[in-house]
Length: 132
Image (cartoon, rainbow, N blue to C red; front, top):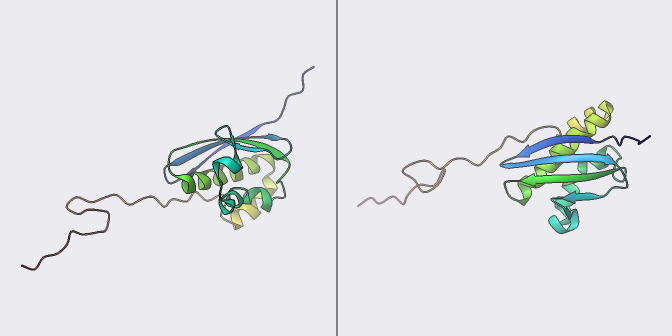
């Protein structure tokens, strides 16, 4: 008889980035778009930000995580991954919810880029004023 491996999946979003996470029991391997996290996110502070939900719930080396992320930039993608990992951890154990909620890991960061308005060069910037 084949043993069924329990796998948890969740989606996270931030700005224009969307991350899909598949999490299975393992040794703590984390890959993003088929690459190791150290290669995809070379900055250590960004990697720590992504792994914050795992550290809060004491699950750093308990799950192998495979991430598919697209859209946005690196920082937006890191926020989307963090959101997705937090959502997947709640599927693992509902008791993690208060700790993750207290650190705002479950909150979808709704801040988006403000749209450019007509008659001006950017969202807020105005063309140079000339009195004469």
